[in-house]
Length: 348
Image (spheres, rainbow, N blue to C red):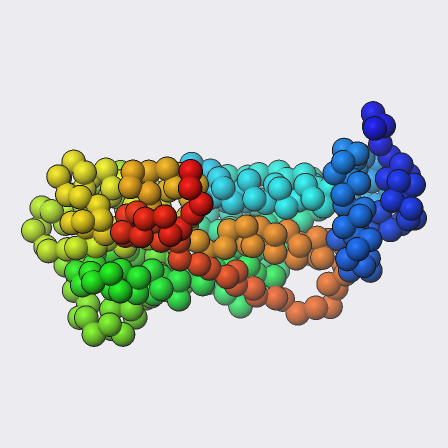
């Protein structure tokens, strides 16, 4: 194996031109599947890494893309960042990560400020700006929007099936015979109808209606940061108000993990007394006791799709193409917290 293999070394080993190797690395559709597979295998085996500095001098590109997320302390965004880095690396790109902390001024600054000159394009997940700010997305730089805060904007947009996946999660609880299903992490009054919380609550309500069960406001715990502490406090609130419940749908997994702790402290068994369903399918949910049933919203697909769309815009292969909105597929992952032992994952 060559110590520092070059593009020429990979091309010679694969029996193709340097241009073909370059097309594979840049995910060009001009390369056939068999050739792409052979070249990519050799790239991996030989440990070839593009010379980003040289490429930047030739093309005016840095070989770096940006990812702006609200908070890396939120496990979903940390795992999303990992998925984006992996998807970018397959295309010979590096990722610069910016944490916005849900600050409106910082989000606007990222879109309009000097950070963009250091990157070739940006994946942006806003938390503070919303539909009323759609005009700020009119930027000359390649931009792909993530999440639910803004729809119908001038950029490519990758999101998830929040409502239908939440509906499917509640349907699983209903199919297990649960009829008093609490909802924790729900949107506060007046919150944007396009927020994740609002869209997932809509799915919750639709599942109840389809199941012939009345919506009970006493079962809905609103507000709070989507973290473990809020999950604990939500369960404590339900117990304090003495509302009857036999299941909980938490609008993300960190809420659910906090709820799991609070239920155990109260002497309630999961799933015997209370079934528990989360959302995001975080890695740690497999290792909780009991393991956590959850919605997998397609995080890996979101990352792969978003990076692919951004590269398309950077390379201008999508030039003239209208803004594209893509929703990743989802799946329900049943585990022990809803009584589905061994259904969701291979054995640990």
